[in-house]
Length: 337
Image 1 (cartoon, one colour):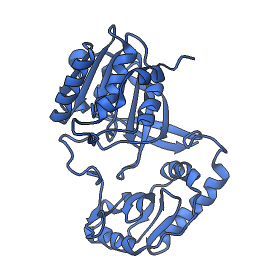
Image 2 (image 1 turned 90 degrees about the horizontal axis):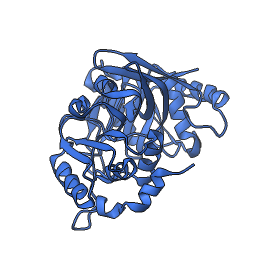
Image 3 (image 1 turned 135 degrees about the vertical axis):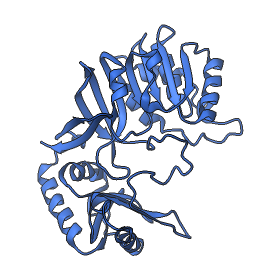
Image 4 (image 1 turned 120 degrees about the vertical axis):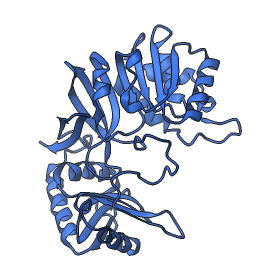
């Protein structure tokens, strides 16, 4: 099978798009391997009309423009006017007359150039926006990161097809990008939504915590847990590093008490109650704070996960993807089968 994405990558000069004139990397540049993987999920073809949400460095748009060819059409939207102007210049220099870059809030899509055969996003909305679905041609496809729990950075990459203005054939894979916001973010390392407390640290990044069980609690409750997380010592090898994504997927699909946190040891996800937190770091270590309640619940989930997880399978293989409609779009949540 012809790999159109790799063929496009061979023809597009990556550095030309992601490096500024002074040699510095554009901060809004994503890992090329992640971009290539998502574009393969998108299944682009010659002549497609495409909406891209999140122009960034412009590299992803350059690949799209190369694949769809001059018979296609690309509309790319970004909230950052500087990025838009830069990408527009680069597209013009590359001769991509079929690529148009504009500044704006991508949540509303681009009704004036719809319908689209494909929509791809490099920024994470809280749900699958209704405007994107309505602006997708029948049988078209959307690939986008989306929030899968009401906590910070609980994201996954959604792929779906649109039939009768409804998302169908939904699938998830690990991954995510910066949250979708109505203005340009100033701190790319700190979540802007669902965070219950942020604790500044003098010798490192701020510590924060986000948990469903804390959203309605006094701020002092989250403050206390965050303070304990600062001093918490990780328990090594709670989950093998190669299994961490599978365990994260299971936890987010199985618990009503999901939690995430930014700690001095890195980002973690797990469980929290008003009196406790237990979270797993990227290296599979466990960090805990407060009483043992959350740790007990997480341990119970770990035991069930060991019996559930499919060997050598993608993290969301045995997970149903539920799409619940509301006035703004579809809330996406993983559920255990």
